[in-house]
Each structure stands twice: as C-alpha cells, then as structure tokens.
Image 1 (cartoon, rainbow, N blue to C red):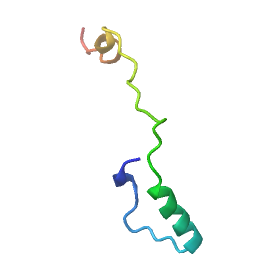
Image 2: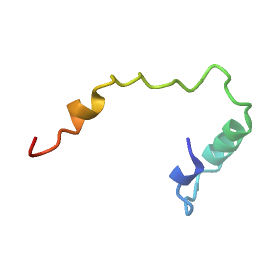
Image 3: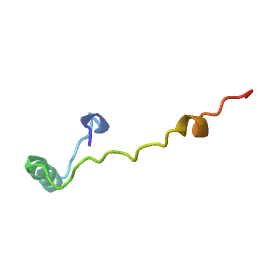
Length: 55
C-alpha cells in the first residue's frame, strides 16, 4: 500500500492496538506477494473502446 493512502493526522488511542500496528510494520516484507503484468490488450483496442464520432 502506498504511503500516500494513509491519513497523516491518524491517532490510535488504544495502546495495545498501537503496539500491534508497530510490530506489524516492523515485520519483513512478504516475498510471496508479487506484482503481475496486466493482460495485453488486443491490437484493435483503440477501435473498440475509442470509437471516433463521425466515421
């Protein structure tokens, strides 16, 4: 998750929850989660989705 998606003024008042979050953030990254390339678009994708008016 991108850091810009977090609220800057977030306050966690529950001490146990704050400790749980801090421990989770200190864990190493999960190497089983990987990015995947999107399915390649067909060659005529522009004609399918972006039809010009007046043709």
